[in-house]
Amino acid sequence: MNMAIANITVISHTLFYLLGIPGLEDHHIWISVPFFISYVIALLGNSLLIFIVATDHSLHEPMYIFLCMLAGVDICLSNITVPKALAIFWCNYGGISLYGCITQLFFIHSTFVAESGILLVMAFDRYVAICYPLRYTMVLTPSVIIKTSVAVFLRGAVTIFPIIFLLKRLTFCKNNLLPHTYCEHIGLAKYACANSIQVNIWYGIFVLLITVVLDIILIAASYCMILHAIFHIPSQDARHKALHTCGSHICVIFLFYIPGIFTFLVQRFGKHIPPHVHILMANVCMLAPPVMNPIIYGIKTKQIKNRMSYLLFRRPR
Image (tube, rainbow, N blue to C red):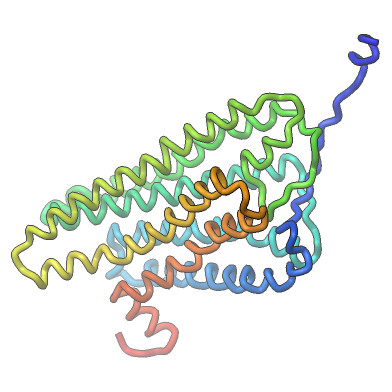
């Protein structure tokens, strides 16, 4: 009996199937419409933003360079997630290899961490511009911008890279049907056989704390100091101008973090909520920032708004 048990070979799944949004299969075609529209807007809007900053020498300043980085990350995030979702909705093609799934989730998580880092860097840019305006060009030199940019992307890659090995050590034999439109770390890990995924869970929490949570704390601290400096400016017009320069960034911060925090809380405490609601909210977190960021900056930033009007409608700036 013991020998028979010992001879049983556990077959690990190497092919998985993303199901899209279980429970709403009959509505996949209709759900694909906002996905596709959002994808097109994200690609066109962020590409136009990068083009405007790249071709207008008056916009070659740290704030707009960081904005270009944000737009580039948003394009990457859209390309990583939406095409596969559309393949599921349109062609019912959700097949993905284990390594393909791990690759997708690596780029999703590392890109998400990188975007959080860029928002932190943009908060630091506004802090220096408002609190130390005379030292702005001395602090944010081209060398500092390059080093900061490299550090942001390296942090995203380095912190997520161990997840690849944490997943490769697992044996997947429970199921190969993933109820989602894209692969994510714990969503894949929970399909492991008898292997303990406690390490995966704790490492995921650790990464969240040292990246996104830390970024939120530092951004909040930056804006506390920014507001303190603004309300000590004697001129009301100068106060209004300083607040206006932060308006776009604050909107983008709330758009990026609030849906993510809300989704995290719902996943942890909203066990009674149907699974398709969780999946839809997770997709909103991925779709909303790439779609809305160029619109927000296009509306609230005068230089970009004027340049967009000139390019799209040939109106003089």
